[in-house]
Image 1 (tube, helix red, strand yellow):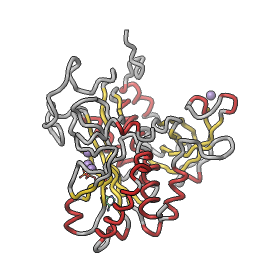
Image 2 (tube, rainbow, N blue to C red):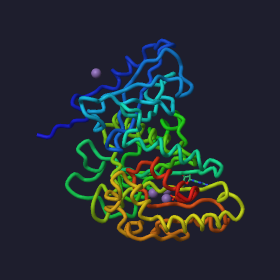
Image 3 (cartoon, rainbow, N blue to C red):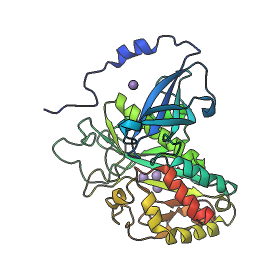
Amino acid sequence: MVFNLSQPTSSNKQTLMKYLSLPQPETKVQCMYIWIDGTGEALRAKTKTVNFIPKHPDELPIWNYDGSSTYQAEGSNSDIYLHPVAIYRDPFRGGNNKLVLCETYKYNHKPTESNKRKACVEAMERAKDQHPWFGIEQEYTILDSDNHPYGWPKNGFPGPQGPYYCGVGSNKVYGRDVVEAHYRSCLYAGIMIAGSNAEVMPAQWEYQVGPCEGVTIGDDLWMSRFILQRVAEDFNVIVSFDPKPIPGDWNGAGAHTNFSTKAMREEDGLTEIEKAIELLALNHTRHIMAYDPNEGKDNARRLTGQHETSSIHDFSAGVANRGASIRIPRQVAEERMGYLEDRRPSSNCDPYAVAEVMVRTICLGL
Ligand code: ADP
Ligand code: MN
Ligand code: MN
Ligand code: MN
Ligand code: MN
């Protein structure tokens, strides 16, 4: 017997609406505190009522949780502190309610191992005069509640890749309702979502966040991932950020990171982009270590040199080359200014770690 853990009892959304449409006292605001757990990949959340409408994260109280239940602490010394760092409108509860992204700190007020944001903020502060911008293309796969790719035949595979990328029609794309609900929810929340498209593997999708300056790319991307998983809950499907969810002749999932400094965006910025690529070439291994939560092990399954990837062992760069580590978009080469695309980060990467190492290598020479 197979138990469906995500939905042990059937839930009735219409009945739920009866309760959610009850008037909410104006001075009672539900704040959902959200944080990254000890895996460095999964998010956790719990809710607190506050008696005012928060406008800035500093107005919200520091809170805590049981770190022994999130792979972050021993049971005998389990309290982890939650420091609110970014506020978003809550698309699920609506009204004045908020989603609150938090950093995590240990009992001794040191950041937890999975808190990559603190070091990212410090690097961004040092590089702020160069105005680093990031745009991340988040790829993911929708799975049915039994972990099988959504819409795939239960006893086999769909036809080979080809018709699905940016496709239309119920035989080409699977799960568009989730994509549309997520896009609007991100816009409502205040996330810099830039677009979305169906991907090469059926049931695989992408959305882009950016361009965002500095640490905001990490905040917005993590919150967009929370919203995606929460939307998927409502549709009783699962989101996988695994970089190679289906082995074999199926595309993996990445988080291409587009990057520019002010100098790259200005006239003859291409010279700056080429300098950056030289620095990236010298630091390939360090970047691979930071581009997935398991120091390259996850990305090793994806960066094979096939399926529009470069080999994890080699560094390469090229104009319009989707088989290179770094791609200079055609238009950027023609206009001689713009940005570069680092195609190596995996779909389950921590954007704080990715953005930090890019700024260290390209902007700070560290
Ligand atoms: P691709 O052609 O690789 O599929 P996308 O259109 O999916 O590219 O994504 C491009 C991303 O680049 C977007 O997230 C966008 O916000 C970002 N971007 C655009 N201009 C810049 C820039 N100057 N610096 C950094 N990121 C940028
Ligand atoms: Mn309790
Ligand atoms: Mn894209
Ligand atoms: Mn893509
Ligand atoms: Mn891309």
